[in-house]
Amino acid sequence: MSKNTNDLGPMPAPRQTATLIGHEKVEAKLANTFEYGRMAHALLLAGPRGIGKATLAYRFARHVLSSSTPDMKTMFTEKSDKRLTLSPDNEVFARVASGGHADLLVLEKGINPRTGRLRGEITVDEARQLHRFLCLTPVESSWRISIVDAVDEMNLNAANAILKSIEEPPPRAILILVSHAPGRLSATIRSRCQQLNLRPLSQQNFRTVIKTVHPELKNSEIITLAQLSEGSPGRALVIAELDGIQLYQTLVSILITVPAIDFESVHAFADELSRKGSEGRFNLAMELLLGWLSCLVRTGAQKVLVPDIIKGEGAARERFISVRGLDHWAELWENINRLFIRSERVHLDRKQVLLSAYTAIGDLAQA
Image (cartoon, rainbow, N blue to C red):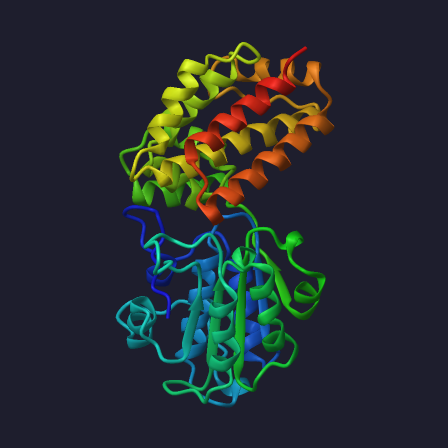
């Protein structure tokens, strides 16, 4: 079983997280469908990255694994609070948190034994474990559960390999798919799953999550994190841990100079992000760059103003739009995003990826 942890510094990994904020209605729906025997064999938890989908998947898995009574309709009393809360002192909680529960299999990107680095995708060999596992008789509970976090990270062959479990589900087995971009999944997978859409958190809930982990942050910093993360507390915590606000300042200060790009600054920035141990900051920089371009396209289409995080970035976006139409910028976003995804999967030279992105932006912004 995979035991990868997340990248949130002091924030516990989803399998170790006891609380979930802001998704009470979805939790209640899951509790009700399970209680009254209307549980789908395959769940698709969809929504933006970092809002609690994986945490909800583990909460539901613990709930099911701790409910060993075969008759689901008599499993709960009328006083049930319809939440999926389980105490961290519970044995099931501890076994799930450690990755040692015999009736739970988690598929996520693993380590490539040849390189010692995290794979860029979930492979078909890893995916083939899933159906074999779900067909086994439960050992510690009445159910077998598999979580795929995230199904978007499966390559095509891996995605095809899990179809058998979705289309021909074994008895007393539940498959939980976490997806950050459900629109990119095959229609077959989407149509065979019960899809539950999780929404970004309210401002108050977002602030509560961030303050729990980083009580030292000022309100102005939390507001900036909310803007950069688009309301995703998980992503905001990554930004905070990797000094992402400073990273964004450097990134945008270069963009503001376009089309007369200061390539000396670009090379220095790329060198910094290419050093050993800087993979996380490079990935974040690329995500922030893509987010900036996405904001350009979105605000241009909707004709709305977004408050500047860095002075002059709004004017730069307007200047870019005046030179090239939104369709060109949307196409550039797609091209840079594909380059970034490829760089993760086949480990392209990080410096060249960043240089290529800035060069493409500069070329398109030429009047």
